[in-house]
Amino acid sequence: MYIYIYISFTPYVDSEIFDDLENALKPHIMKQFFMGYVLRELQQHTEAMEIFDSLEHIFPNSKHVLSEKALISYHTRDFDESQELFEQLRELDPHRLTTMDTYSNILYVKEERSALSFLAHNAIENNKYCPETCCIIGNYYSLKAHHEKAVLYFRRALKLDPDYLSAWTLMGHEYVEMKNTPAAIEAYRRAVDINPRDYRAWYGLGQTYEILQMQYYALHYYRKASTLRPYDSRMWTALGNCFESLERHDNAIDCYERAVRHGDREGIAPRKLGMLHKTKGDHDNAARYFKIYLDTQGDDTFIHSVGGMYIYIFYRTTNII
Image (tube, rainbow, N blue to C red; front, side, top):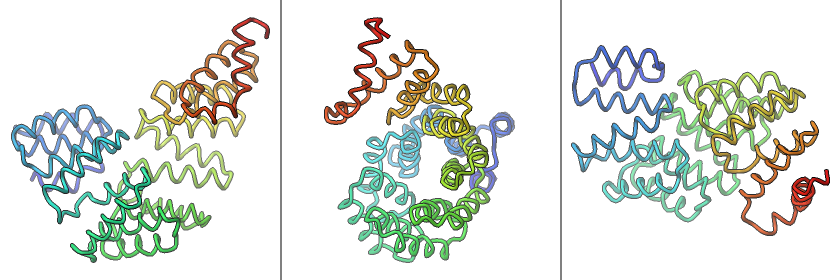
């Protein structure tokens, strides 16, 4: 029963159902695996990691537990930690392909082309007819900006497994790069049909409709993504940008402030907040957010390009404005 619930029911579990299940299911070691998996799906990563840390004490050599911890680190965007865990996993099982598509996503984001190439060749040697292998190769070609070839391999993955969620989402990203917005929308919609909790597909739909300048549609999909991923600054930054395009500046400020509170690494939100507050004549807050923005930028050459913000902060702090 636990295995059936684990595989089939998890994408449709919400917090309320989770609480009911936790009370209804009898104590069992498989219950712990299930609860950890569902908590990861619900984006409750701290609680999920605690469960898998405790399971690691019981199963110190479990590749599944190590894999789950790597996935949790990936979803919290701790790519360095996740990469380290995946590399440990590969040392334990060099022929493993399960979850290696996620590992390839990390190498893609970090632009480690040689490592991704090595992973792709290794995957082909192990099983070239595996969906994960096709996905890894697709990521490799995407990193090389060969988007048509990337789509070809994502399609091969879907021929092998039509419900392969990652392939639909990644293929949507490739169609966006190729400016094929109708195909991107279709791919993302297929992804959310398979798993309505896939925030990446909802976010992708928002981006695609924003490209089409259909801001209200984009707003709807970004809201879906932010509901699933409330602690991700990127979701709030996207919402803020959408509200700003609609000239709903107060809503935009609220969203950008939430992005700052949730650790906007790119520094987009504080810069936007500085500009919005400056436009409203709120010079104190404008200077404060410009300073936060500049503090996030470590590259001197980049800082020189926004010297106007320094000048603005200087004049504000000396009460000249």
